[in-house]
Length: 119
Image (cartoon, rainbow, N blue to C red):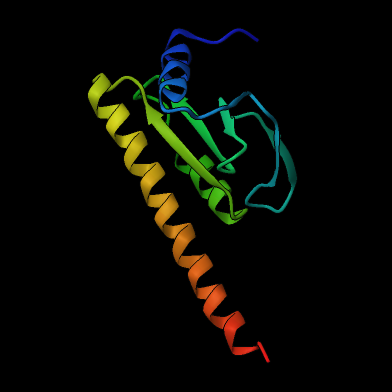
């Protein structure tokens, strides 16, 4: 499938940030009724293990999708492209930073626990 114009703009920004992506890479998850589903968010960043969905309209509510990704322990960033360019770009960078800090915290906690078990 060909990218929409908003997806092309987000893809270009990801390239500017040096972030390699796969377009519409399928992800397997379980919905709220524990049924298996395959979704294809717009972008998958393999080195970061997270997905990006480009939201092109204010009329679509992405709350359900965000909840499902969260329940499956997966990270997804919803980029609201319809907002001003500086706004969605800044939001994307801030979410990347937040996810990085959250992961670092989890890793640090695991390392501290692991140190207790060393001989």
